[in-house]
Length: 283
Ligand code: ADP
Ligand code: AIR
Ligand code: ASP
Image (cartoon, rainbow, N blue to C red; front, side, top):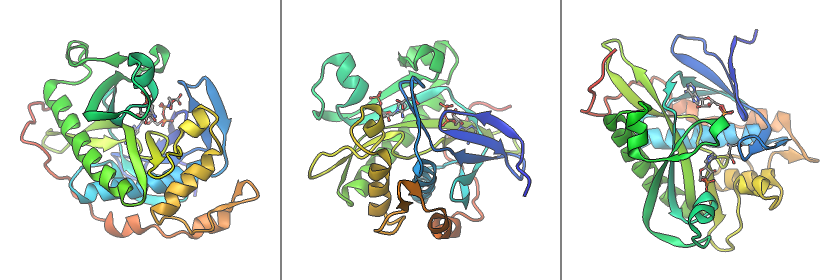
């Protein structure tokens, strides 16, 4: 099948035009970057694992009523998603202090926060995704109060649900980053849905017993093989066989291609759900 038009080539994913209007194909690359692209490497297996993990977690979230962009898996590296207008805010939710929170405020890594902390960052690589407050978001017109409230409410649900899901498989959800997008229905009503990806590239997961870091920090700070960590998570989620999908440092493409996509069974015929009474904006 001929490749459709490329819409955007990002650091970790490429977007292609989807088969129907309002859809895009997300292609998960093997590229790993950190510190806004300063550090870069290509790691066999990463794209396949993130595609798999994100499809699974988005489907689980959809199942508890969080509207997401995920439509269905296409192959081991690609998924079909709804095309959204990305809101340029990265919402970070933290349960345990780590990463930039420790650096910025001097909090000791591993400190359990008195309650989950919500932060907003302006999504702009050239500026290094700076931390911003509510007022910046409204004054700069990045999102309005209704949208931010909707995004934040969804993030709390995501946190509650995924914290439990990961605890059940022996992993601590330390923090995560979400991106949201806008879509409009035929009547011009606005909906906010979860977009981008939900994978170890954008969350921190520590082994509950040993504290070992299984997420992208392995790459950021050279803590060990990245794919080993991602495979560990995928195995715990029941998405790949215990023996893994790597062979001599490269992905076993044949095996990866045969992995079932349970997501497709539950993700067919998805209807847009009205997610909020707060829909002040029409186009
Ligand atoms: P980056 O843009 O930071 O390099 P990626 O390589 O992950 O990041 O590229 C994916 C891009 O696609 C991101 O900018 C993200 O905001 C955007 N995106 C994610 N989901 C959707 C979607 N459903 N519709 C349109 N754009 C999306
Ligand atoms: N994140 C933030 N920007 C890009 C990403 N992936 C994610 C990190 C981490 C959380 O947001 O992966 O899970 C907080 O990151 P930090 O660096 O602000 O501590
Ligand atoms: N996603 C950003 C980058 O690729 C930030 C990070 O994950 O550290 O540089």
